[in-house]
Length: 379
Image 1: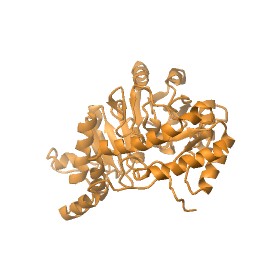
Image 2 (image 1 turned 60 degrees about the vertical axis):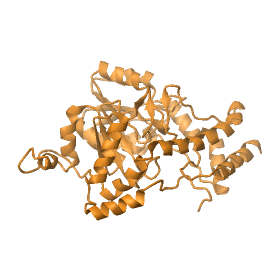
Image 3 (image 1 turned 180 degrees about the vertical axis):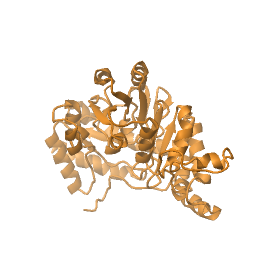
Image 4 (image 1 turned 60 degrees about the horizontal axis):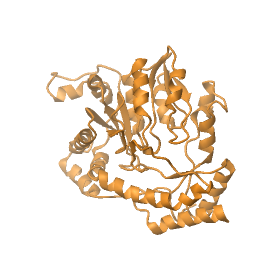
């Protein structure tokens, strides 16, 4: 059905169409042109990341990260089950095994207190996921990783322009991955970026990204011709996409400020419901600066969540659940996981409902959402 108030709506915030026309005029729309480089520099400078490489998607960035770490058969990677499938696919496709840990009930992020008991002699990396743009407990995660000589890849798909202890998400681990999918805060339809915080990985990342060739070295005059030197793929985005993206990245703070006003609108109006125990609102720890990517509520029971979701959809409001935990999926069962293995993940994922939150949503539309929730909860 067509909803009067959609869950998400792509938007134009500034010079997106102008920059696309400029990219065409410059005559390079294939990739790694002016706008791709401008996006990379902006993200590097703003978030203090040694190197940012734009990719066609966050999935591509995660795949590059797994390849850079040489993950493969026999290796284990620790991650939350409450995440999108790309987090696991990035290394499972290379033969590595996922080791799922439960999440914290406050932020829905990986429970860092469970990490050490999940580590074995086969563990090679930790993939924390910053849910809703709220930072995981990265100080603890990094300390555990260094203690056990493990690599850390931040899945910061939802975390562009969010911070943990004043450090940008994606800039803390050895590697990080961003998403610019149309459902994210900063968009270009499909797009992503690999954040490289370990400079020793930069040269090989260039090669993997460019189909396994040393073409970038050739362009810089470091070799007299380029050739196939490693395994790689085509991880370079279209210049059309990055031209659109650059216009959005120019407005990093303006977009976040606007999203915060819409987040706060919900948060204030649901305070009484929270205090009455009718729902639970999101939590942002004091040491985290959010980008206000999502607004969700957690209902008392899964049955209540499903009924409210149906009520809102029947009212023309598109509200949806989020991840179906990976450990309970067909693939998860193939790795030996069973229902009950991660009780907090299973409980919260069944009770969580995401509400419409996008750049152009109006206070009147948000009032309709709040009123519909109120009608359901209070009868």
